[in-house]
Amino acid sequence: MFDPRIDKHLIADQGEYVVDEVRKHWAATVSAVLELVGGLVVFVLAFVVPPQVWWLPALVGAGIGAHAFWRIFEQRMDRFVITNMRVFRVHGILSQRIATMPLARILDISVYKPFIGRIFGYGHFVFESAAQEQGLREIRYVGDPDTRGLTIQRVIAQAGLRGAAGRGDPANGLPSPVQPPPRAVPQPQPQPQPAATVTVVPYDEGRATAPVSGIERGSSQAGWDWLADAQRREDERLAQLRGEPPKGAASFDPDRTNTAPIDLPR
Image (tube, rainbow, N blue to C red):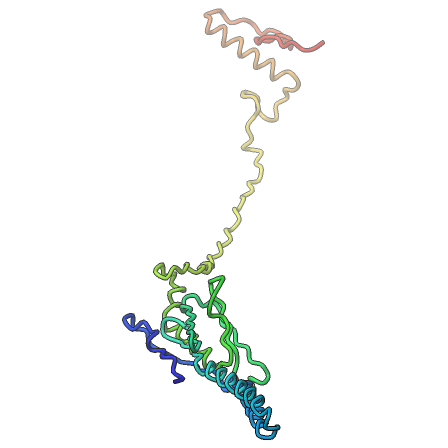
């Protein structure tokens, strides 16, 4: 009578099986039980009121009791099911509703445990998924919420969704994760090269070259004498090439040159 027949909602040909079937915690029926007790009290008043109006408390009490039974029956028919492929909720008595969420769509699971819930061991689940509108968002009065939350996480891990996300499996439409930057390999530090040794050779006056050939160091020639001697040898060489007889030594003229004159600004 209180069985919503979960087995008929499984995808048997795809190998789906139930991992955990969660029933409502007894705390969810406390208000309905109190309503039932109140209905009984009102119904008992039918035996103490005047006989003319006994039907009124009896009718009210019966109505309250029927509504309380309906609420209890509705809570007993509300099931939250965890399978190896999805999570879904089946609820309703005359009109049955089914809300399903695949494991791949679950982004986050929040567990809220009020103070009374921590005392009596129940909590509420809040699912966050990739869909903007979802039929399965809040599951209230879940007994032992910590264990049930770990069960869902374990099923997700066993389904390989997180492993596929780590591998960037294109079959599941999951992007590849951002790869960490490669570790920097320390490069060997270059060894400092020894500085080039500069050998300083001391000046040797004996190896010095005279600026003009034919003039020895330490001679008494000074001023324009070396230029006159060079001009004389040049004239002798030119005369020899022309076949002219050698001339006598001519006095040196500083203004006499064999190059084109240089125009200097005046």
